[in-house]
Length: 170
Length: 170
Ligand SMILES: [Zn+2]
Ligand SMILES: [Zn+2]
Image (cartoon, rainbow over all chains, first blue to last red; front, side, top):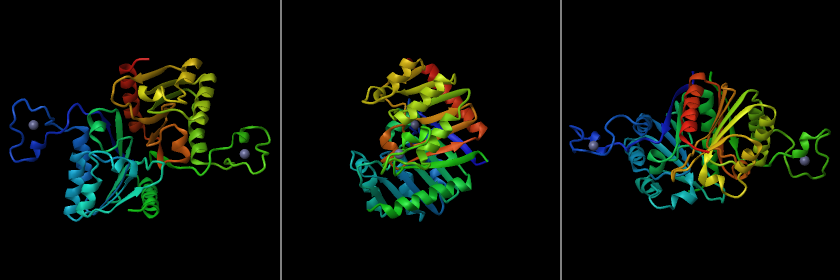
């Protein structure tokens, strides 16, 4: 009850983007993953959002992840993002892309870190753990993301999200 | 079922160490916390270990936490620690203290990070989240630690711990 599963990283390979195309990947000796990985399962959970997606993550620089978030926004899912200012200016941060697309983003401008790494999907699933949304965290680091459906837990994280959303500026 | 509670940080104050003494704290205008905080509750969970404590945490530099770990070791609890090599050499790391006390410590010596922040208490409780065991994470950062009792989840994290323990060296 309440715990759906845990995804552990690192993945051996990044997912092959050709797998999204009709007919899949036809490259010989393609070095990317054609089977499910922890990242593809993570992306499947994110992509299952139909109404709301509240993201509260220290660093977001992984394009596979930001593509899913941008796609959800374009489909009408209400996305909100809280992140840390020290990270949003680092090379490859996807924050500028989110803002350009019209997704509201708020940041912790204090010297301390907004160090959470959680997301709430439709108020029905919580993703939480050590996993920053970066490429290094996928294929380099030892990381975890636990997928939880416990409603009291989700309410506690939603209250925390709402508190930080009110506290932080754009 | 399976979720005990979530501790959110930052705490407004570090806990007053005089509260452990008979009679408590008698300092006038003491600037430390005399009431329970997220950290004191975290320490209470850690301190409840009676048989085993498996720690898998990126950075450990908080003396309030390491004092509890050292005390458990001295009382005969079997403590094992996995951490990241990049962090164990930083100023204030408590790894040298753990080793000097005889606690087995293993490290990820790769350029990637052993980025987990979890602990398993007696095989019955899992502490997991964004929280590194540092002073900044207690009174500065926005952080979470979720306390979980789901047995399947604990088994998944125990298997991950055992895998990393075999993979890493002292
Ligand atoms: Zn391919
Ligand atoms: Zn005091």
